[in-house]
Amino acid sequence: MFFCERCETRFNATVAAASSDCPRCKESEGVSVPLRFRLFEPSAIKVAGLSPAHAASQVPRSQPAK
Image 1: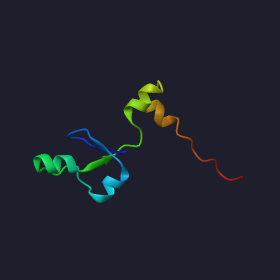
Image 2: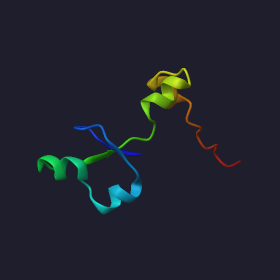
Image 3: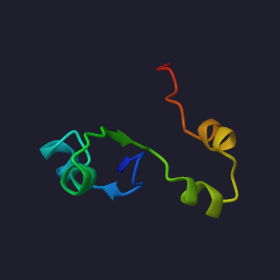
């Protein structure tokens, strides 16, 4: 998910690929604000009952080949 830090609007990858700036801020106010990628939405982490630090530790790591 991509988002604008200024207006907090979320965009999918298709919109982000078409423009690296927030189209809403650019259209309404003429300012260029780069879209940021966010792997985990804070709301999803909160619903899962995890803290951001705990959520990062839950990412599975690959096992070395034997």
